[in-house]
Image (cartoon, rainbow, N blue to C red):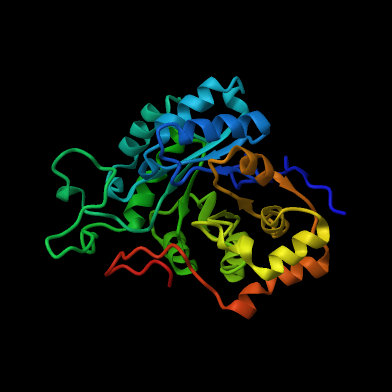
Length: 312
């Protein structure tokens, strides 16, 4: 039988820094103490990689937990993300995130989406929102700004010491190609964090990023809300065969594909279990990999950024 163990594996970023293969995602951990309690628990059981974002509105809880944990800051890999309304001024966005976190620096700062939202729509100074136009659609900037200009500004950030590395999130192959080919590009993103799970395996994107030295990070690794993949017949069969949990099967499948995986939970037992991985046999690995071929691919996170279409 499989013997899942705490995953302490490290991957290398193109900066030379190490990033833990399994991290705690904190999206939707926004209850009164959800973010705080989940991060405290994660660090207690052995996680050394915590992922948050400005728009998650829990950076204060995440940072307090990091500072209260007793684990040296230097041992924890911390990621946060630039929200779309602050793409004109990523340094300010990062400084505000650090203030909320109560940290001097983050290890990785990501552009959350390749979509700038119009900051001029915001009248109350609250940039952690989605500005809406009179017709009810999102106020996406289409002419005066784009993610290429944002990246040019983000490239100045590592030299400030406020972040050790910069990267992107929700970028398609074509978006990355455009970024790398832009005249002002000097830094290849260290990471691209995207939705990834057995119903959305994205092998072409993984292969492309690998060819460019970009680490892929998987969010919603269990299929997002209510972890639908844990009810998949194939996953359950592989779990029973190996005497492990369905979550351990799916997270181990991600790890075996060679990228970072960011399971999210506010449940103490699941946080503990999600760090444990094992080696799937070739047969079991293929069975999980084939789920999308049988069920069809399914993307869960599909916000309407019209007229910008991110996933082409």
